[in-house]
Image (tube, rainbow, N blue to C red; front, top):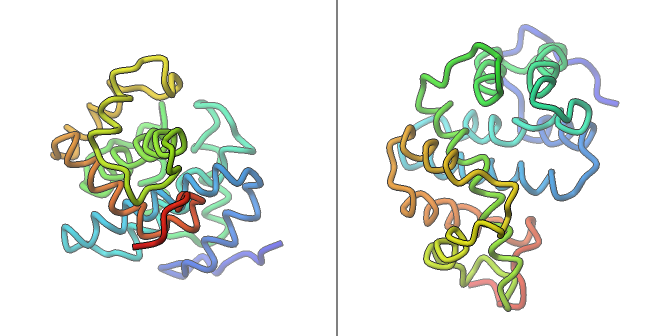
Length: 201
């Protein structure tokens, strides 16, 4: 069990964030999802000259409470008090709340828009990679995702309109965005179990 963090602290280390994730999340697929979003957020922070550690932290812990609050009504609202107890900076907590439904927190900053844009698309990219012969990110291109995009039965739980809207709100063309997220996820392909049968470049 993690000790409560000092609420006066202004930051949380990545190791502490990862420990928080492993405390509350037992599903390896969900852990890999959060690692994917972290990688994508770090990519965009680098691209736009933002705080890479803060953006990465947001991506890493944004779904930490999904297993204990697995409804849109509960997540992430009910997770916020836990994060406050652990001393997570309030701006990060507000950003996490912004990706929820009915939280009242608007997606009105670049970082909040980035989180929304990177969240669901990582799941679709993972699903596409896993049905390819290579089962790898290393040879995955946006064109392959685009082919599966048109197949509404594939990864039917994902919302294409929401992903399109999130990319538009973030201010990036959808397929450029997909390419960026693939590139970001390739950096941590071994951690995601998505090296497949291709040697690491």
